[in-house]
Image (cartoon, rainbow, N blue to C red):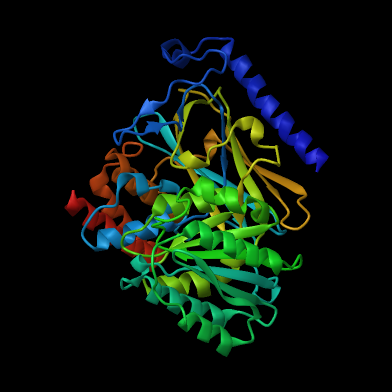
Length: 490
């Protein structure tokens, strides 16, 4: 591990040395470059059209660092509201969750760490390129999954009485109970204005008792999410098993209106229990959905956020993706991309605004990262401006994580050179790369109204339709339909 860390340090040092040498003689590009580049002082954030600061643009800092994120709630919520004939609120659109909702083409690693893939394509006529950083963990077979201690924290407040909320939660829980094995255990906590333990930790083999407890869930009063999570974590802590995956699963519309309603206040109440390797999965439901609360709880509570609006969504989360959503391959996983200033003039990370961390915190294992399950993929897209005439290495991406049991750190890296860039975005790269670009560009259109890397928004549905045929992927076909519908709603 020390040798690997030393190698990564030397690689970063080499990039900076190359930049210093390249800067000693002026080139046509550097002579015309009017961007300030003084002493690593970051440029002031630019204002986006939606009123938010865009802090992912930089022409000075050469290091981009962020916590990994496997949330998909933003895209699944957008699917629902566009299908209902309206556009999602701009602040609920997170491009990384759009991209991470689609199947990827990354190879599996041979061990329990990550594989790293970097690829990209040049954009015609404007000196920019799109780079993709792709990460993947090894998939787990059903028999390999460690036993699970699952504490369900179920919102039974008045707002959950609307169709598609508590009824969908019950159906999802019945589906999950049918998928669990003899080593798994379940407890259920319900909350409205107060929290109630409906069922203490019970073996998954007691399915009749578990199903009966699910059926007892009934709508009551207001939403004291703080009380529900506090009680849920207490139950999970009492039944904690070191050999198991210990997870609290919150099922709610996120519309807290009683007790402490802030994610920070709620997490402060459960911090002690959450620090005992008890992770969180937030499952959102409902047409009116407290997206920000659920997303921040997941991001800051060692967990992930998903959104379900149908029985098919519930099947995907609790059946098809069961192992990935319950088990862990990595804790506090972070990515760091070091750009070569001799070849890259500036970069823009698409999305991940609320997952950015300071560069110096990358190897500080006390700093929070993302929790990643088996078979998960994580994708980050960068729009970069290339230095005219420069060649050689563009960037190196490193992912760092901790073993879920021992907390031992691990690292692995990958890199890309300018010659690796495809000459055409829509002809040379893999179809999955192109799908990622379409998904990210669609998200940027929804939240800013601006095109990504010069891609005309009107072309996105056409590209998605073509890619749906080449990949034979129904999810990509649905993306094409969503883009067409969204353009008609503007």
